[in-house]
Image (tube, rainbow, N blue to C red; front, side, top):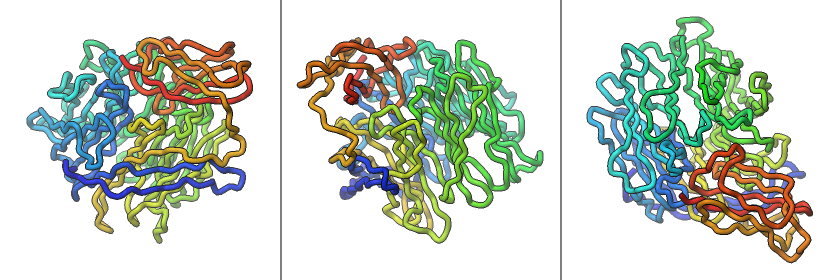
Length: 547
């Protein structure tokens, strides 16, 4: 993407009532804040992770990269420390400091604190580093931009193989997880290689100061072209305070037949003080010609029970899209899936989001339709969850602004423009038919009216002070009715994950010390406080934790 990329005119999209007469939500608008025009031949890295605050100012930052179609060339990494201006000019552009490398920015992760200073850090994957394309990762510690040089380099050379040609270490990464429960985020790295084997590898590097470049755990496949970890996610599925690892793999039905039908499996590896490369749970997801997995999310809570849930989307040989949902529970050795067939040709789960700051995570879905193409080809849909019962009636479907393009890939940003509403980074990939370069937008949601008769206005509200806070924050209910008291509070991070809950309160005020429900100090950033009172009202407000 060029520095002089210009924003285009505003696009106003209005959310409407769902397709059921029983379902009608507050009217809202998704406003396009800025559009990024990507030069032809470039496309966005599809491994981008959002939601981090690498500047340490309490507001989320935006980081992304563009990779040319050959992939072997290095690309800049663009960093925006606040909401992009009308010309979409980045605050900083990073380039590779490594010789003999390609694919700088092929993967990005920056929502986790890897050195324990409570500030998010930026990890950049260099997929084609080294003579044998073993790959590598550069880590830039957050808190003191602009970044001048990486603080840590991890090479793919010697990562468990006598030869590491085409290992591609750093093809994917995760940093917003804490596997050993020490309060510091950990780094997960995926590598598909080595050459001709493609077993698939997942490496775990435990966060700390100093950060160790030696993996604490190596999970690898054992079958050619298994690609164990090609879909890699984390979440706390049993509520024990340790994040768990979710991986998928593929095993050929006929051994040695590389491009034939495959079994697709799900595996869960438990977090804890002693990590293991033996899965605690595994199950078959799909097994048919042309069947496959096209999306998986795992760090959200659909039914509001405090356990993260796993949602997987895929399709079969008949063009039928399907969903499998594994609801978290205390015993994750016996998970059962809820299986759904969908009427879209391809239905790709892309993101958990939280649009209404309630305990239920919402779904952002990429939609496709078969030929002949219709207006919903290349669109996205939003499904709001407001109760324990799964709701798959779309609240909003946004057709692509350009026919027949791959539009609607979404990453939640948090609140970049400080308006109290969530923002989203939505982009497309380039196409040749019709010719269309890649582009991206930032969409911001703000509620403008309310048509839900069940939501009644109240003279009561909550206030949080000091805000921003460093050590602790007071949550107080205020208003005209002096008899109303707090009954419980919940705190969510900007990804909609529950981090703290306290029930059975009495009184008008509670002091929160900035620790989560498991006794871990939270990192800096934006959090949503949701409070409940004695007459059944619920209130939400934002607080900012600064270290």
